[in-house]
Amino acid sequence: MRSSSPSLSCSGANSTAASCSVSSASKSGFLLESPSLKTVKSVSNVKFNRRYGAVFKVRSSLDIAGATVGQVTEVNKDTFWPIVEAAGDKTVVLDMYTQWCGPCKVMAPKFQELSEKYLDVVFLKLDCNQENKSLAKELGIRVVPTFKILKHNKVVKEVTGAKFDDLVFAIETVRSS
Image (tube, rainbow, N blue to C red):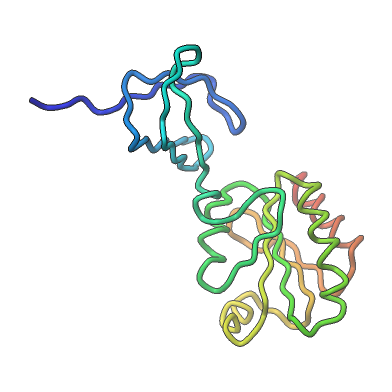
């Protein structure tokens, strides 16, 4: 006898909320794919509750890739592109820095504040050390700090130096486009 697979149906799904019902589920969970958002959602640890029915946590492909909205995520040559791809339509801002750079150290707390302000933007930082030299070269870094702003997996703006106001203007320009 073949067992039935879990079935989940949702209505009104968007990037922030959905109304879903589960016909059957197990602890193994589900994978939801949203064609409109071009993201995959991982649903796991489905728990049943008399009042609310199925209760579960949905993780976006961005969460799965390792970036957290509202904070700066350290990346390297291996994690950078998967996180950028998982960001989908979101704006991505990359802080390219070195440990020894004074202006980089001045910008770091300001960059963190921006990540807490712009929750619809993914903030990443890359230490341009020997280990990440190939990615830094691929992205065309010439000076540190350099901030690369990406949209749809492409660099669309660049700010070089510790120019906070220019960085804010560039982020707002890309977000509104």
